[in-house]
Length: 270
Image 1 (cartoon, rainbow, N blue to C red):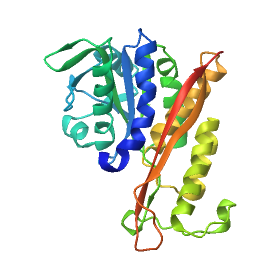
Image 2: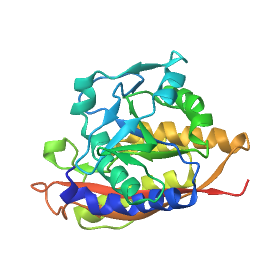
Image 3: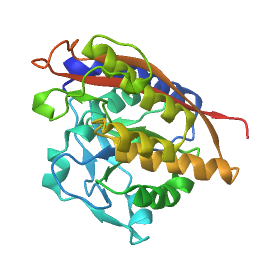
Image 4: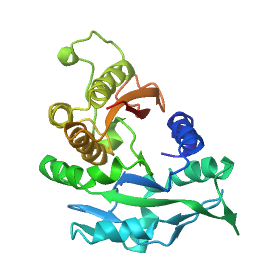
């Protein structure tokens, strides 16, 4: 969604990046996990770009980490046209550039940011078993203290134009009359599962309600990484949603809305 709809909500989560940049002087790479809206992908594809251009300063791509992941043989490389067409990653880069540009640790030359790099990774429409496999593969990377992870997603897309129009009912266990209230409770149910860090329950939730969360696969991959790292004693996280909004308050079948939510994950003592 455009910044006029999702920007304010997204900004809340990027305060965590601002904090990380200030406190973690070893930070070197921001991994951006985002979905695919235009290309069928039964796996994960890494950006082949050397840099990402934004109006607020360009970001250099971490070629070293890219090569490390490609050597596993489990990833493909995005075509330039696929990379440029995918808005879910594109929406994150100006925020990242702004935070890095404001930080005292950033070196710039001709509008390019060189101290902290990015690595965009597109996660395709993969089944839960593949989400688990990629989660395990990513786990040691995403718990690295030198790496910060951004996951791109919005939440419920409700309306005829999205092909998703569930109406208020008792299946959520809460009495609601308005459509927008139903949407909020539906989203909150998924958000609670994400906060509990339960990838299996999240997959069950999606099967039961078919909520149109565009970043459900990147979220699923990340949740599996979180579980692996917790089991192996490498990292424990607290996940909390800090902002929620809707593009409009849907009240009838003629309306439509998109939901936005920001969450922040913080490391806990092991």
